[in-house]
Image (tube, rainbow, N blue to C red; front, side, top):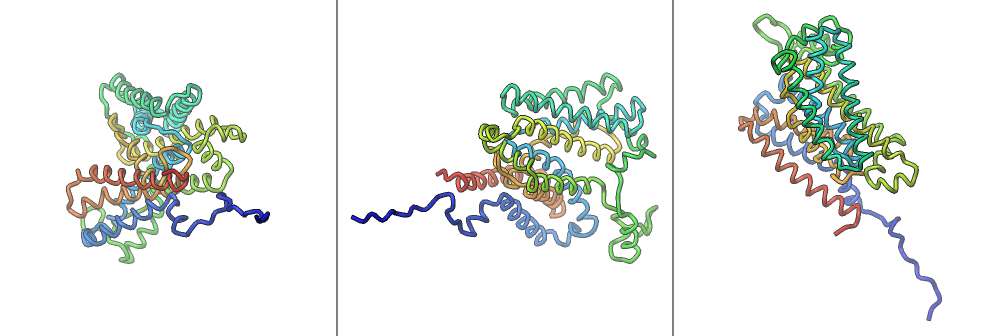
Length: 372
């Protein structure tokens, strides 16, 4: 009998094929979905105006809306929690800006700043209740959903006897902070492009000679800025590692010195911040606040994040993937109109793509964990 010891391969250093490595990238679903969606509409809606200057701006704005709330939902889901109050937070934040800035006639910058403080505190309260009680965030934020929606309806009805308050755009004139949410940048560049004939211009009416697209809305700038900052935070900082650890295995993370409770509370606060950014941009765009704003946005944010590759169990995901999921939403929602398809089928699309994404993510989780 030979006494030569047998070498056993260590599972931890087992090589992985390039295909397998690519399959476990969280952005895979978002990349595949984005390519498929653009290919479809390039084939069936290319001549519809979807890809001219105005068409691109239309679906870019819608995608940016999804993107802003998806960024917050993404980091929170990676940390292992959900926030179902995002949609109600949007309606509540917009209404508070209207109450403070129009009804109470406060300076708009003060109305916006105070609204951010209130909403972020609600986010902190959500996080605090979750970590202190151990209750599922699904239940805690579902309760907050009803509380905020109730306040959004009750407060304007009590003060104004109505649930829609206008005059925000007029109240924001001359304000220094409001343009950061409702303004546009690069207007001079687009005017030059219009004069040079590079992009279309209006040929009649009061805007004769003005470019169809006269600037990039701050909504899009906020979306890109949040995606960039969140991506760097998640992938290039120690705090990003803490987010992954908190969602992957909270007990092991605590034993390793990770302040799990602090991380989770901060992620709830960031989600509330993103919802308030969305709400502020929205009321500046429409010039009014309505009690029904933000309905179902929490589910759309979660779906965008799941499409982007995040696992529902936490500890895995990508901000870039979530941004691609939001882009898919915006392109499809507007593309159905350009392609002449019944717009109600957008909800059918949401259901189908969510089911596909969950199945794909389940397969990825099994690859990562070795489950069968």
